[in-house]
Image (cartoon, rainbow, N blue to C red; front, side, top):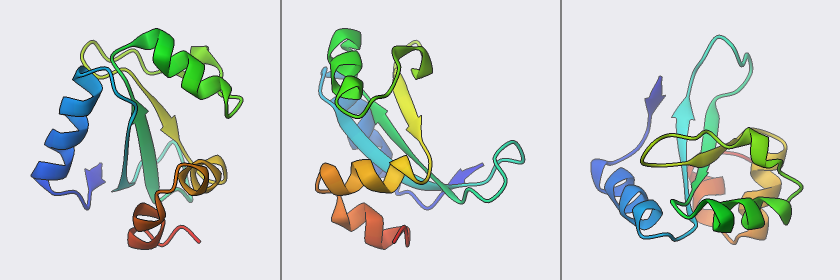
Length: 100
């Protein structure tokens, strides 16, 4: 279950993904399959080659891409989640979701 997002934030992320930009969004998230995880960061881009190339910078395997038909993306969880958010200058998301 996802929560902690404004509709406008989700819409902006979706539009950026569809435009072929690397888009990053974090939200609170609870799933019994991932005990202890309280948030997820989604890094999406409709241009798969661009997304794959971006992922290589962080040693993310292309097999880890969630091939959503409209919004292909990586799902990031701690500890790589924090590392990538820091590297991408997303301090606002780190603070908002208490990831330090």
